[in-house]
Length: 63
Image (cartoon, rainbow, N blue to C red; front, side, top):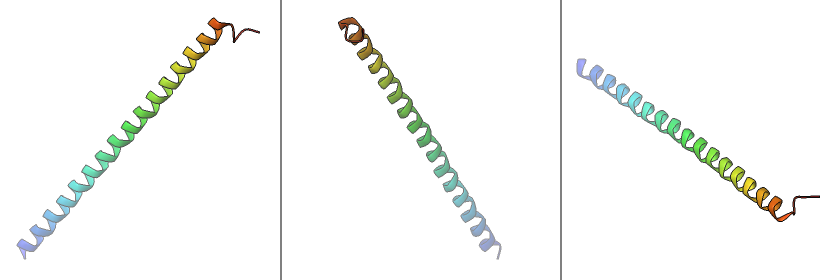
């Protein structure tokens, strides 16, 4: 009887640990996704700035 209770407790603790590991991994994945998006936005912005500067230098951006 005590052994059964200990087995159940152990199973619940293992399940809780597994769920915590999954939650931590999902949290890390969300942060990684956010970093990719921010890096993409920064790269796109820098690319647009370089293109805009090149247009101004060539006179294409002037009326």
